[in-house]
Image (cartoon, rainbow, N blue to C red; front, side):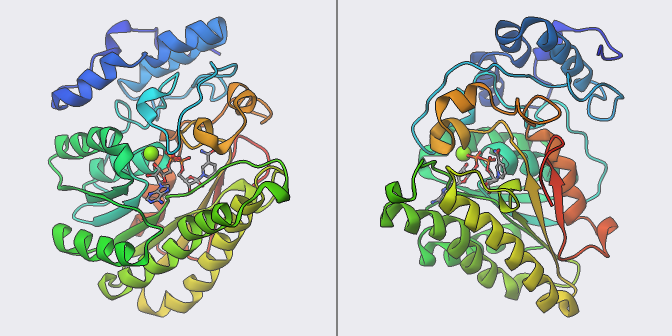
Length: 352
Ligand code: NAD
Ligand code: MG
């Protein structure tokens, strides 16, 4: 279960080139290794050891994936929606220190919704390190998380564009795409990733406002943003939508959310057929449980957050960085024959 490299406490120092705000945020928050030792001492010390390698070549270094990242139990940590990555314990790993690029998206222009935190942040960091300019959308309440991402993109020498706003509004969705394309100088990659997930134990607890907000965020916005993006997308462009394992096996407490995630699979497969002859590929990602602010800010009951990922064969949740390579692959020309596909990453249960 040990990784190939010993734990090196100095890895917690941020790599050179990072702007001070990000470094300060990282220092202020609990270090992943320190935190995990408090929650699950032995196995998570090994996690920290695995993370130590991440300062070097951690993502590609051979190691046991079950102990590579923190395992439950996690501390109770309720947050107001939409939640901040900076307040999570342990802090999610979005690849800030570990993701290394190799020019796979050189010169591309990407727009990522929900790019401030979680899976969208992991994609944003990876895209920038692969040579892309990146625009992120998020809610105004998430400005502090977003600024960390902006600094990380700029640290790569890439253009970073921050466009806060609520995608439940059609007019904003259309402005978002125009603004991103104008500030980036075009658009090659669209990642529809933002989502609303609020658990309710009974169908009778789902208000019309809840239902409306979930469908607006997860489905209408995907339609409006993709419609607005179409005139900008040229052959070689890629659209990537974030679905979920719940599209295939919906938990009883996520009725409205799960139906949108199933619809995203269908939207992806249908649109892929529609735009294939334009040279545009459309794929989806179906993650299992990932350690992001979506969960403690109403996505799950608190007791489920504390044991999050425990019931997967891997015994732990995924960290956002573990999806970075999938989002890069789906955007990259290396994957030129894949369209209308759903890529899973679930820790071993469920999925496409
Ligand atoms: P996250 O909270 O980090 O990201 C979701 C983002 O959605 C937020 O950061 C926020 O910026 C954005 N958002 C929500 N409502 C919005 C609105 N009205 N306007 C603008 N932006 C809004 O959580 P995450 O888990 O990284 O979520 C990213 C995607 O991954 C979502 O589509 C989610 O459904 C999917 N997903 C997550 C998991 C998981 O376990 N975390 C599992 C399967 C799928
Ligand atoms: Mg967020």
